[in-house]
Image (cartoon, rainbow, N blue to C red; front, side):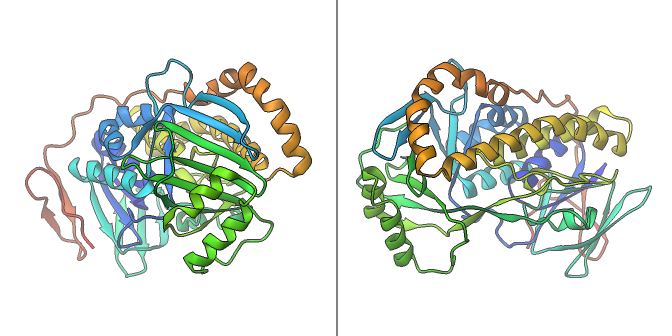
Length: 412
């Protein structure tokens, strides 16, 4: 089976790994020259996502790129401890949540995909995809074309694949939150703890990074999106005013040495069509769930898709099985993400009520409320030996041998 993957981020690179492990020939097409660049800030992988990484054979590489975070503490704006719980897992689970920079995760996944024989082609943007009974043909802005048995749309929330698959699909909408993040020095923070402060103007997250600095992210509630082109000094000045009522966020902002590019948070209505028998959506292209689970859910998608393709007699049957396997879980995760956003944009009365009831609620209900999310196991890939060698299709349609070891170069 030959597979085209559109998008070289988390969903695309993970899909390439999973598909290569079931013996498919995989080419990843990425619009940007460097898909592993530092878009956004740090991301966290909970135990459900870590199980997928273990099944894909890349767990240790990802762990080395980040830091284990066994605990999560939630604080009120006044500094009151609202809860202290296992981070991204149930108590007793030895798979501690891992936090790392998004670019580091993409680099680790892409390196494993290439090592397994996937080809990564950068600088190619999808503009059309035509399906037939025999397969699918992708057309790129450069004029390049490529054919395959399956096209995987892993190209994010502004997916070109989604609009081709379902022209009436919803478009992303601003979620009333934007994120500004950075690193700070010289602020005493306990290692291994993910701290979330429910501040007056939005949540403030921080933790100790592997190098001793502080990684932080301000998720600011705002009815209208801000001007993302503001200079860094202006962003810090604004954040200092927004979080001036909270001591720890104020200290971290004052000690900031590096600012990352601000990003808007989005919502996406239910996608009416997620596959047509030859094209399938994964990750944020299908469901930008948020709630800190975007990367883990994309990893789950990749594994379940590969398992379905290995088990079913045809591509169309496999995509039906994949969609059935994922629909209920994704819908539940979307609802959880909505509640997560509501908690971060709460008004003054809701904040006071939350600060009163959250400590008892966490003690009594947290583990039961999150078990469905963290104990989920997508299973293992079948033991299918990958092809001993394959060929790569170059730009003019000729076939050429892959270099020794089955590892084609990453081509721009």
